[in-house]
Image 1 (spheres, rainbow, N blue to C red):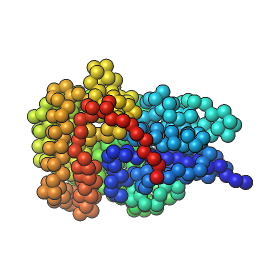
Image 2 (cartoon, helix red, strand yellow; image 1 turned 90 degrees about the horizontal axis):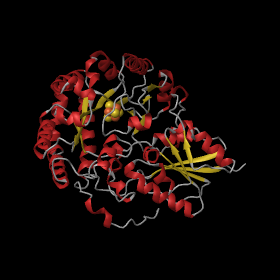
Image 3 (cartoon, rainbow, N blue to C red; image 1 turned 120 degrees about the horizontal axis):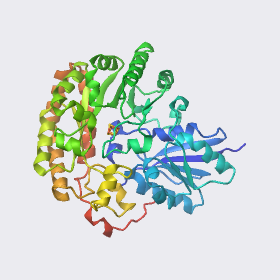
Image 4 (cartoon, protein in one colour; image 1 turned 180 degrees about the vertical axis):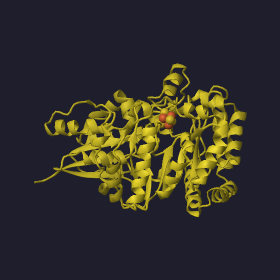
Length: 460
Ligand code: SF4
């Protein structure tokens, strides 16, 4: 029997290549692997990631395309090309979930929310010849989480991706995680995660969770069991994950994480200034206080783990001098790896709604301008400076933070603080990734996008 073909596509941003620039920072489109796992066995499935190589038009019975905000325009371009050939397209992912009406202009159907609870119905309806326009499912029960089809991903990814939890009880102003995955923190069974890890060919792992240890004693226990399981099963992986500053209050858990292979934790520091943290509603950091940062970094280092600090430029209380202070803090602090982003109002966030109400979003020639919502450009009018001043300060910050001289100093500091050469090498490589992403193109202010035509790129 001839199988039908489903093509699943992860589009790339055509303007800034971002993490796709370096092989070391390319990320597996894990959600497409989950969709593939939920697709009936009578389908042939192909996963195409435009971040790996240009995609060409192929014959298919159905196409599924996922999109972040920064790749939404490209997703719509690809969808239009397939639909012109008469091939139906289903759009999904976080951007589409936040703006389904926009997406419906470009796809035959849209999936709103987590796909696990609606993809089987999409396939069932398609096979019955009655594809609906909108599919909306509740948040998934992670005890039923399917093992993603890692075998369908391109073999060139250095890092495998894996998920242990979803959702966040916090409510940071700029973050779309609660809107997409909900406020309830849901956990996958530990044994299922370990079983999946055993199948991964890569030694290097990225846990895609927003917080690997969560916000409660129960979630810390879950993380503890996971790390113990990795040690017990001798998985010998090296990994990094996102966590909150509160992980520094549990040195024993940090040591266990390090024994299981943890090399680096991405922590949303956002700012060294409490006014900026209040603007961003960053309660986790406010509860501990900025004065605890130094101690928190030291505790993480003592476990042999590097700190990847995420910082935001452009909060409402930020002035040019406040941004220069942020840069100085980054230069002098013991943060090992730096992610410095322009504040970016993503659809679905309170920030987006507020700035829209205040008429402060200046890149509103959508969907064309979604490609500028990439965390390195200025797409809104800041409260206490001109948009151009924010772009200029961000570019000055990048030149300082990612200067070869500072990166060498940070490498030696990481080595000294963690006493772990492998961790220092991880931090060095990660800084090179962020350097490439940040220095790719100087930040632009997206004022004049209304005048730019949105010509369609051909699929190669
Ligand atoms: S930034 Fe982190 S802590 Fe804040 S809402 Fe998002 S996931 Fe939760």
